[in-house]
Length: 230
Ligand code: ZN
Image (cartoon, rainbow, N blue to C red; front, side, top):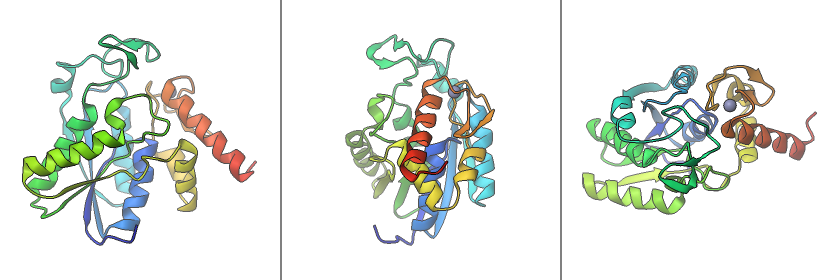
């Protein structure tokens, strides 16, 4: 993709994937603005990390709080208590951490934010990934394409949703950060852990035992193995 000198809006969660998406966005766009969403997540410490990342890159950052709205209408171990490794009470084939329509709601929020800023073309960036995702159906490429069409129709202007990590595995996201010279910043300034454990490990912050930490640790080790760094 050639450099696209426009403005883009990025969903910044405070986690690993959106950090790497921000690195990508800063190379691709003249101006980047970040939006984070408090959706009532138990691990809301990640929002503090989103603030640290935005501050580090000197990017304008807005946080919307829709926690009461989401927690009043959805079951997920990310919102309530429970074991992340169980299956979801409304869908046996999905993990208990699934928050129904989370990505769809986030993308609606950030598109409204860009619309309010009167953007003639709305470029949105999200770190959703289909390669080694947790099975969430709204992370799939087909869903994102449909959502872009829905938002374009709903706002009556072009809405692009860019997903630079859609076909990357976790090892490749570490590689993107390393190539940008930001591997240490990735590890120190992001929090992916579902249990919001902030302990710093060689692969980043986290408890090491929740699904998000296991995915992150495995990705880091796979990346190290591919580069022969010891
Ligand atoms: Zn964890």
